[in-house]
Length: 98
Image 1: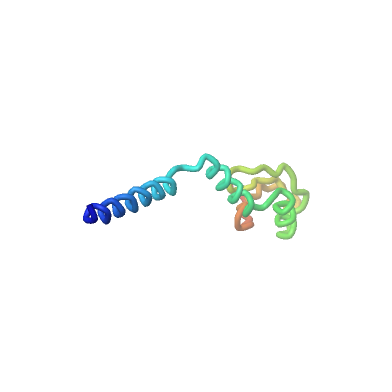
Image 2: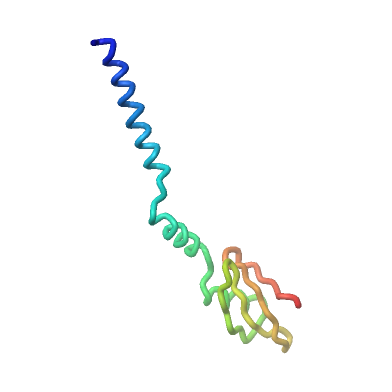
């Protein structure tokens, strides 16, 4: 009987380990929301986008809309309306081309 005790103990350890590993791999229904919230926390908001565009010499910034990880806005440069694209994560600003 003493020979079976180590085998039984080893089997228990393996069973507990398997349950713990399965719990770690199980999808958490809250995880997608937490991931989205974390992603949004690193992105610029509209007021930051407007300030960044103006800091690059554009005026009359308007119609700012979020499109995925970019903001798209209309602004004026040298008296002309241009479409400006801002990376929501990095703040990089480019003018859209036709």
